[in-house]
Image (cartoon, rainbow, N blue to C red; front, side, top):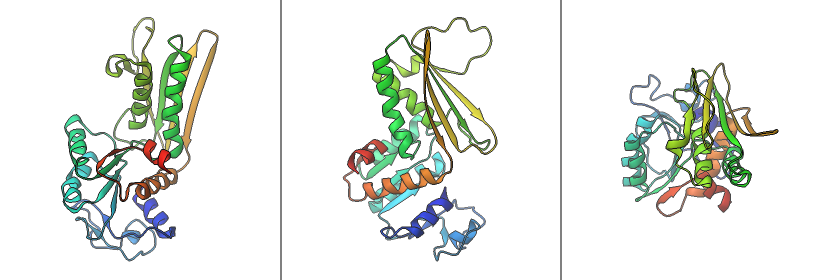
Length: 252
């Protein structure tokens, strides 16, 4: 994602790259950020600290890395676009606290299509009603560390909110053994990991006699990077608060 963002920013006429940040123990700190990832020289070095002159920071690191950068962002009034997933309750609380000071946009998936899927899946669940069983299947590459994906969770949470049900009570993560008949109102969430799958999400609405499926497939990480840059443009100059890609789509 970092290399994809570097390339797309370089091709853009209204964005300027002023820094590229890595973890403090990264072996290539001090080298050209473009060359470090196997690309061309871009004239910006990898650093461990946030450089000066930044309007917005794009973060696709790790929960700990993201939270570690928030204090300097709040001190310098730097807006933050976060595509990192896997935050625990304490880390999520720190994100909300930062949003009291700076604009913070958090999305488990920066794809424009996926963010439309959140809304469409919720609307379908509401209109179809309780007679349809809902299952969500997501597939990602073998290197993904968290499961299920943040995107799958967001889809399920959007559906639960639309139906007025408690997500934590109704969510079921995979099934094994003699689990019995499927009770009504469950939201099944299943994770597949393998190879180099960029990201697939399927929402299944199944009833007696028919099945409806909504599916989104990401063919490359470029779709996430382009969405993140769209979010960055949107966030600059906004007042403090917690934003989402829905805000970006509504305001574009």
